[in-house]
Amino acid sequence: MVQQIAIGDFLSLYASIPLVDVRTPAEFLHGHIPDAFNIPLFTNEERVSVGTTYKQVGREQAILLGFDLTGNKWSGFIQEALKIAPEKKIAVHCWRGGMRSGAMAWALGLYGFEVYVIIGGYKSYRRWAHKQFEKEYDLKILGGMTGSNKTNILHHIKDLNEQVVDLEDLAQHQGSSYGTMNHMVQPSQEQFENNFAFELSHLNIRKEIWVEDESLTIGKRCIPKPFWNQMRSSGLINLEVPLEQRIQKLALEYGQLDKDFLVECTERIHKRLGPEQTKQAIQAIQENRMEDFVRLVLVYYDKTYRTGLGKRDVLRVFSLALEQDVPEVNAKKILAFTKSIGIKRAV
Image (cartoon, rainbow, N blue to C red):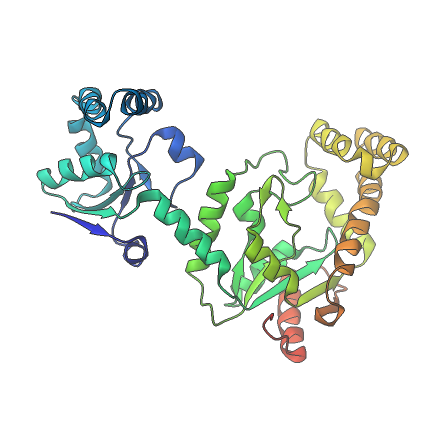
């Protein structure tokens, strides 16, 4: 049995019905619905051939070529689908909900699957994703200079049953020139947005959501503008952490990284850091004087943070001093502080 279903309706069933994306591996890698499985009807090269035939010869010839290319693959498709959905209940989609998903749905339905075809395909998910960023959220922004341990504190805030969106985890980047930490690989912009929207959709829009203060870009990924605008107009808890405490934390963290990586990242910000400071920072890295290195680069990052802070509405910036680096204690202190000052939803 094959039936059509809108993306919004399907997402309410998402936990119980596996989703199969029948687009090519390249399309899937560029961006896909979170947790979807890829059973590509065509290889990357085959899709190009079918598309070229469609444009230059016509629809019917493209369909015939498609059947020629997939002729001996159908048994494999069905076996893969059985591994994914042994109970024979499955959803499929392609780019626009057209021939590729239709063909796969027909074959699986013939075999006895209960098949849901996503109306509008992957494009419908992309439209749905953009709508998530346009909703109004009750955001609480956690700010503070580099090394304030904001991310770790956010995780402890989440442990206290608060709603948290970890943008740096979604972007796989910690936001500075050193943000990949020499091991993280950023998703495509499209995949970042897909994962971000999916996470937002699981939150209670009527309750406050904690987000770390970020610039518009996190590494090479850009926060969707409607959501970022809300971040900029929302109340910000500005953590004031002693400089030496921040230096020690960052020196310990960066001291574990490859020196060549640190040098390369430092050279990328040489214009903003200045030639002399860059030279001194690189020398400190090479001599394993990590606290000296951190102290030098923090001059730039602290200045950048203060500039961004100065562009915010002063009436929506609330500073809180944290003297101890104990994230679980600080998380409770931040929640109590926020409740005491009564930050209202951004308007």
